[in-house]
Amino acid sequence: MTMSSASIAITPFARQHRQAVDDLLFNSYQVHTHMDWFDPIDWLDRFPQLTRLAWHGDELAGVLGVSAPFNGASWLRIAAVHDDAPPQTTLTALWDDLIPQLSDQSAQSVSLLMGRNWIKRFLLALDFRFVEDVVTMQRTNGHLPPPEDSTYRIRVAGQGDLHRMAAIDSMAFKPPWQMTLAEIRQAQRTAEFCTVAELDQQIVGFQISTLYRDGAHLARLAVDPAYQRQGIGSRLVQDILRRFMRHQLMSITVNTQASNLRSQRLYHQFGFSRNGYDLPVWSFQLPR
Ligand SMILES: CC(C)(COP(=O)(O)OP(=O)(O)OC[C@H]1O[C@@H](n2cnc3c(N)ncnc32)[C@H](O)[C@@H]1OP(=O)(O)O)[C@@H](O)C(=O)NCCC(=O)NCCS
Image (tube, rainbow, N blue to C red; front, side, top):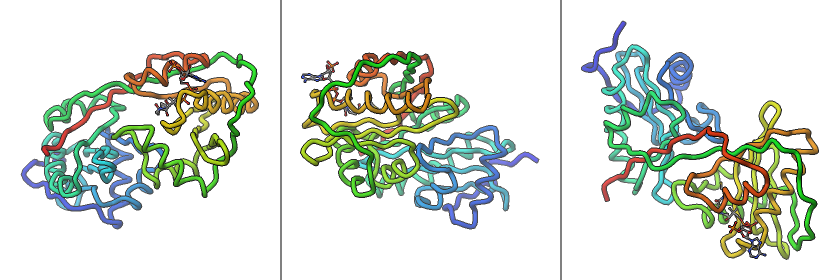
């Protein structure tokens, strides 16, 4: 059955719709999810405010979920359209319903990491534009320089470190790349390796890494800007590479923005090079 454009109704997401959303994400071809540290349904349970559902009768035709603006920047986390629904009409209806609430919450931009191409033409019609690529760098060589004497102590992060880590993250990154405290907490909880660098018992930088099949991914690295260019970032990377090697994890990846040449230089020094797996970031600017 094809769903007609005329009969689409938009509602906010509510908990009783979790199963319908889960089914839509599982069954549809046109699905975008960019969850980072959350499972889509967990994310909806915890941050349901900016998610809209499109209905054709009592059948779910589409879903659009955006993160709450953090320093003005939101991310489009979930977008999906039922295979029988008209994609542009459905996405536009969802988007038009969301925009006033985003404006009320002082959002300045909504960004999207484009994992799959299907959504591109529909986003163009909604005035999203390409911003830059996120590049992937990979390290396959096992050699590591010997550890240097360092004034910085590296230790495993704990619950009590999360506020300071979130503060460093917000100082080191600009919107839309900053992580909220809730995201840092979730990352620390789910990541395999989360370490901090300390100077005089004050945290000055941190890294968060995850495991996948036979490799590892350095998911986050940040140093307090007041302490950058003193070797702390390098020290954190060297330490985590050592831990990976102890676990026989030979394939290591990391992502960074194409424009972030400083981090790329650092990773390059540790044997990382771009592997060609780049993902475009698109963004919508809300009128001020
Ligand atoms: C990328 C980042 C983690 C690097 O941290 P850092 O502690 O400054 O890193 P290092 O000090 O080890 O190296 C950075 C530079 O300082 C230089 N440096 C290191 N020790 C130094 C010292 N004692 N004196 C002078 N310069 C030094 C390095 O040679 C390097 O120079 P380069 O940028 O010209 O190549 C930090 O800049 C940051 O938090 N950036 C924002 C977040 C980010 O981009 N994260 C990574 C991408 S996801």
